[in-house]
Length: 268
Image 1 (cartoon, rainbow, N blue to C red):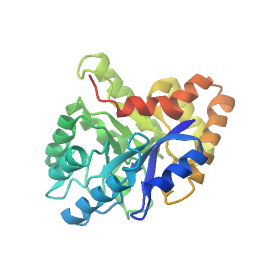
Image 2 (tube, rainbow, N blue to C red):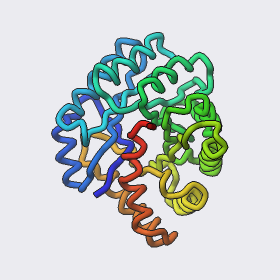
Image 3 (spheres, one colour):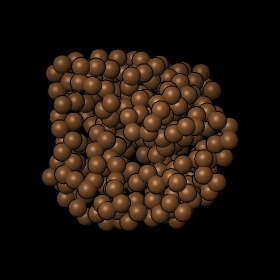
């Protein structure tokens, strides 16, 4: 049994069908990311409605994340609607021609912090959004130290900036150890981006420096669909972690399922 922290939804996805596909893959939980509909406040609200509908059949297994575009005038209200009215469990953001450290977005982060929900950020090269990769360097997320009650994850191990991603995690850990923030905030979403010949090295470095407790498995799969990429990815990662770089099955199980539960649980 495993969980997946990074599955994208098309508007026509159906929650019951997603559950059937999850059962076929022996998947316990899935973070389902709302469709990227960010052209207007109206589109953003529609996206929230869609992901709430998809997750309605079983909100304990279908973990809905709203896609929030902080440049929209209604972004704070979108967060409040997604969490308080629709019961979604977290937030997804991709910096598309904006930087995550811009102070104009602080009210959005403040609302997320108030509502005690995690953020899954895209980080690293971005193949689908023109030249947006320059906005997605992992060091730009150091700003989250100003919002110490927010748990956040950087997706794709920030490939090709994997070392930088791991270093940022170390920086956030040091902030917690030194009392600058109450607890370690950052997780690394292991969703691919890393080509196979990079992956063992990136996972080994992350495990050695940050530890198994901070890595969360993701696939970047899509629904509707049979979740083939998710199932294939978890088996490939099991081989890498347990056989190639020789970590324990307990360490792998933390990455595969246990850490997602921790990521989703608000700080005390």
